[in-house]
Image (cartoon, rainbow, N blue to C red; front, side):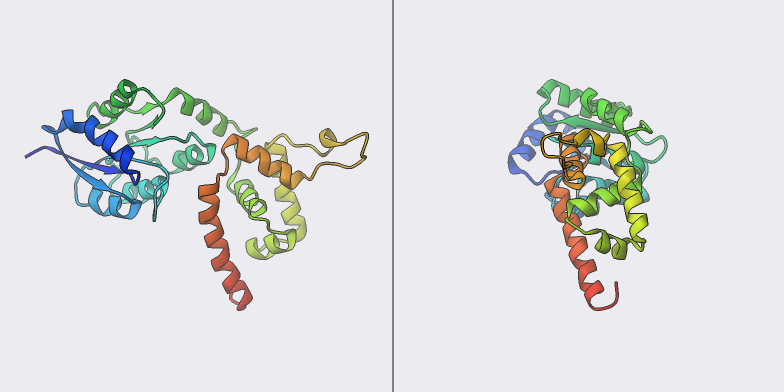
Length: 248
């Protein structure tokens, strides 16, 4: 019986076939199971004492970060290689908060050469060493810098304005005063290096809309994306239902 259990969490059939072919060389060392969503991946991985996982980041039901958090809470010894087409700062930021101490994991981009992907996965899964793509390391450096990294409340404010919430609604949702909302937004603008004066137009005499500008900068940096905002909007709609019924 193979000593290792490998779970491949990937909802894209083409990408799964690529991975399936890649891990054929390891079949003597591990049994392979496939999950096309994060919830099923968690169910499969929890059946094993020391699961090995290759996981996409964007998946139905549970994304890769949510899946990893749930798995590591019960099995911190699980080794996970995140393979993704995204190096978004929001994912790197989220991962930095959930990786248990001394846990081995990896992050490789789908755009990498086949040999590089294979090396990254073998390094993490069988050599018990971390492997992080150099492009992702650059993003890690930015997220770890106190002058540019967003705090939790600044990220929360970014999500709120990205969803189109007014100051009043943000105040209601986050249990803040209007002054508290403005304080969070000003802190966010500072982290994004936005300043009212730098957007002044001599010809028009008006400033750019800082909320819109913040969202544009955040999209460029990968602090938010459409996939995750859809999930955030679902949470918002649930809150709105409670708010309208007086239970918010």
